[in-house]
Each structure stands twice: as C-alpha cells, then as structure tokens.
Length: 129
Image (cartoon, rainbow, N blue to C red; front, side, top):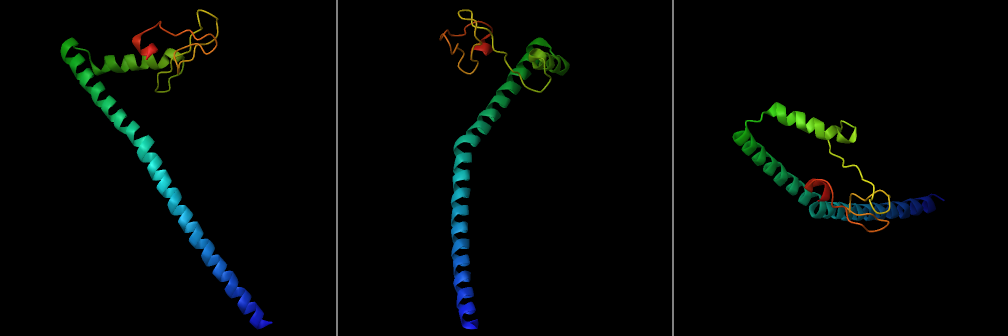
C-alpha cells in the first residue's frame, strides 16, 4: 500500500507542477494584454490631458497679461461653472436639454435627440462640441 501511495503522491505532484506552469503562462499572457490595453487606450488620453493642461496654462497666462484677471477671478469662475449642475464635484456636467421637436431629453454624447434625430445646435460652442 505504501508503494501505491508514493506513486499516487508523485503523480499528484506532477499534476500540481503542470497546473502551476499553466497558471504562470496564463498570468503572463494576462499581464501582456493589460499592458497592451493600457498602452493603446489609457496612455493616449494621458498625453491628450497633458496637452490640454498646457494649452489651458498658456491661455490663462495670456488672459492674465492682457486683461489683468487674477487667480481669485479664475477660481471663482471655476466654482460657478462647477455649480451649474447643482453639485460642487470638480467637474462640469452639461445637463441634457429637452428636444425642441419631440420633447425628449437630448443625448449629450451625440448632441442629438435619439428619438427624432434632431441635432443640438443651441448653447455655447462648448455645449455642441
């Protein structure tokens, strides 16, 4: 019986080793896929955000030079815009307007009514982009 148990233990250890190798291989593949996804989707947004930050800093410095506006003025306007949707949360959420044609809510993502297809063209340039 001891010989049978020894053989059985060796067989199980071999299977455990093979499973560990399989897990390691799958884990490496998953890491590779995650890295690829990050490189292809996340990093371009980070670069775009960096560029937008630079453009905002350039515009703000020009406005300060040309108009005499202060940091206090800027922060006050940021707070005003942040509160436009009723929530002070550090972001500007555009509220969806009612469609003038059918009365349904317009889709902000596509700037059109998903029910009748009318395009949203009112508001500021930032509302239609």
